[in-house]
Length: 329
Image (cartoon, rainbow, N blue to C red; front, top):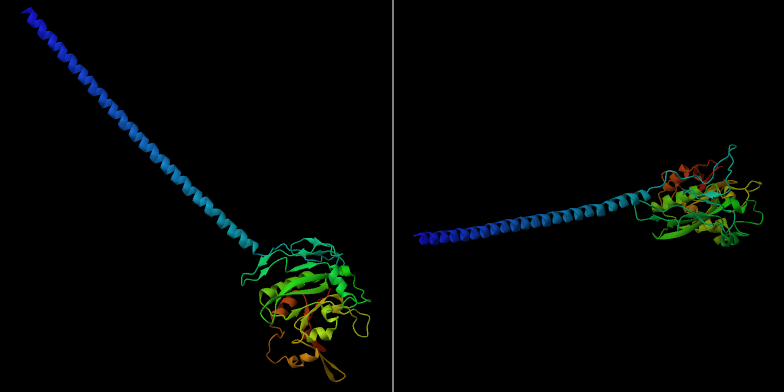
């Protein structure tokens, strides 16, 4: 009997031990599954956060890449504007005389202008908003008289008796719209006192497509005024004295500019007879007629020159010089 009880007790212990082992294994498996689930969830969360961070950085870079384009556009637009700090070429001393022998462009840089070795003084590039005409320092500039130009002037516009120092003159290079609708290069010699004004006027005329047939040095015509005017050439400096006087003319000082000369002739009555220069400008003496290239008070050329302090020969009383603009200093 006691032996049977011992056997039953042993079997019971074995069953209990087996159940304990099975339960322990089941508990461990459950914990392992929970850890795996948590690990997987954590991995997925990390991956999602990483992806969102990368996406956010890309978006920020896109914004940063767009911003410089906007700023650059504004800067380029500003570069299109003319500087408000431009300095006149000639500053006056207290006595009203010009004290600056050097030439100063609108950009404020100085050129000694006294020898042919001087660096050309040039204006900053600008672009007109109304058309595609670009104003560059390669096409519009002021310099001292270069050696080759001065050699060409000898005995012609710069005559042997010329009393105007070379240092007082400036070479002005421009572009202009020809009668044929093509852009052409032009050159003038003027006084240093009006060089900046003349350059600016020709810039505005060019931007407005104002037609000027020719802008050549009068030396191309051996300084013969009639030959230059009859060819409708626009020019400036040509040394000479006023007839029967010892006074130098405005052209002789480089202080006058003639524009589209054939269509805007010089007219004067001499001894009861009408004198017309050039002679082939006779058809354009009657200013009541409507014809092309006529300078009058409504003309852009007139407005620009007078805005810059020039007077127009068309307003003279005893004679009329419709091509002529001059400046006093």
